[in-house]
Image (cartoon, rainbow, N blue to C red; front, side, top):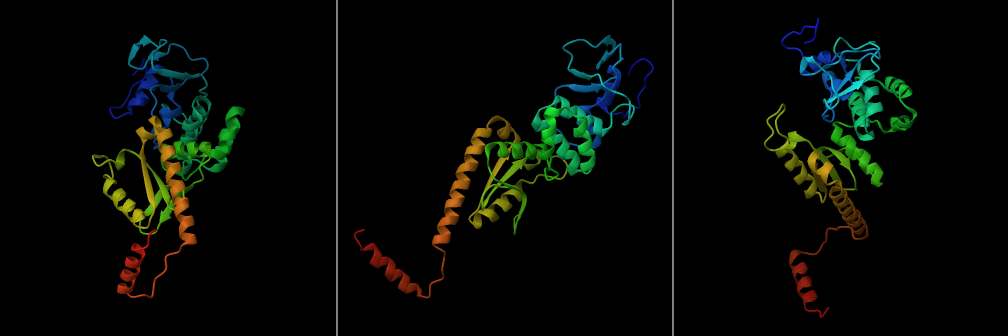
Length: 282
């Protein structure tokens, strides 16, 4: 890989690139090695000691690392914890807090908490080491997020002032990502929700349709939004949520004023009443 460094054939590809550069994987480049699904990054994040020198291109050990190469060098590796080719998960999460946006940072920290790779006490310690400007994000980390898409939507709903409940279970339909109204639910769909999905676990497309039918039969609404739609047309998604919730609230209020009651009149009496009403001029 690099002068004096060798690799086994099945070594992780990103690890080889980081060692060839002269450091260890960190930030969003290291977190997948711990089993976390995080937002994609076009950069390879590599932590090196503050005194590091002779950094190399990730693709050629004979070429020096130059400006413009898709590598983000973190000059803060103290070689405490982790391993030969990656930093500890705590240091990787700290790097995310320092380098990335609120959405990405909270998504990564929430994923680590959801998968029980860190505890609340360790999260507190990570935030204590972070810059003061990002410490206020601590209250936004949630173990209920099952994907970074859910984290993004949760934060955007908070920003929009939309009240919601997360991971709500509906009888006969299962669990939904968000309930944004009395009978209105929002599902954040990843690639596994596509009918053409061929990854692990199989597609959930058929099950999603069945669950939506169950909710609609009970006068509810299910809004499905994929990652691409969320990231490119969030305004449209938010507008649809507001309309659906407004209709939902209005329907609930109407039913409270006019509850459905079983009538004691026979069926033919109902028909006669409808005919007599039809003859009225109004």
